[in-house]
Image (cartoon, rainbow, N blue to C red; front, side):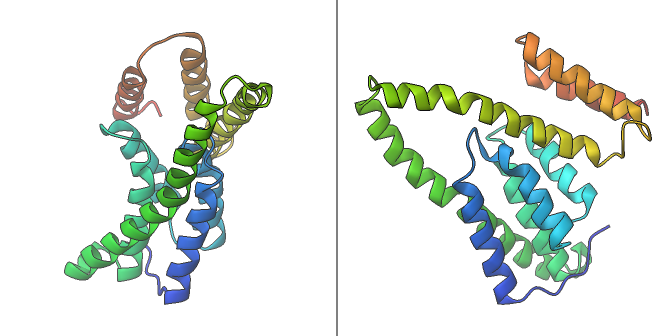
Length: 200
């Protein structure tokens, strides 16, 4: 169920600035910033519901194209909530598109600019010890951020004692991704099938 929000220009600007700051922390991709997006949009500002947050990520992961599209869906949902829900028709579309624009420009602009400049410099200096050490040192950080994202998504279903099935499914999927080269679409399909059967 959509929320009914009243967002001021300062709120939109705050979301834009927050997404720009997250963009500079998006080591390993935008998905690694999902825990802080959850803290900001769901926990702190209350601009998204838990269902809207997890649905945005799930839909973007299942759809073809870059996974950064989950940010666009979050922006869309914030905009629709600010318009008063889909029942407002054109206004929901206008606000939704404004949310998409603010979220996507905010998350893409700083990281794209920085990545372009750093990649060129790193390629030109790829033999330096400092460059090689930096690349190796970033690996555990990326893995930790991905684990934190999985934890946030699983937590939306309750604690392991309250609802053990989603947690078990998350753990099994994590091991499969870690130990095999199975394409992610098979895991998404399996999760969708289990959901359709009512197991999770």
